Image (cartoon, rainbow, N blue to C red):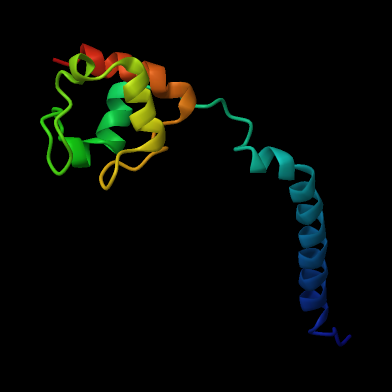
Length: 116
């Protein structure tokens, strides 16, 4: 009645290989969903939160300006089209372009104009 001591290891190895193959096929089936962000809806754009996260390091927490210019009254200084051009293309030597997604620029511009 000698049992082979390697049998449990062979069973565990076989189970591991089977699980790897199964999970590989499951992953391939879900590859498109995973690549597109898991099928979750995109988060709502909130201008104040976007500004605090992406702009406040240069323009200040309260739009007062730090290394970049202050943005209080920017709606009086520039037209909506000029602000959109700055957001899209940036300014020479300072503001990089493309930081604000094109679909959210109008909403951010309206928010900026309301800040006084």
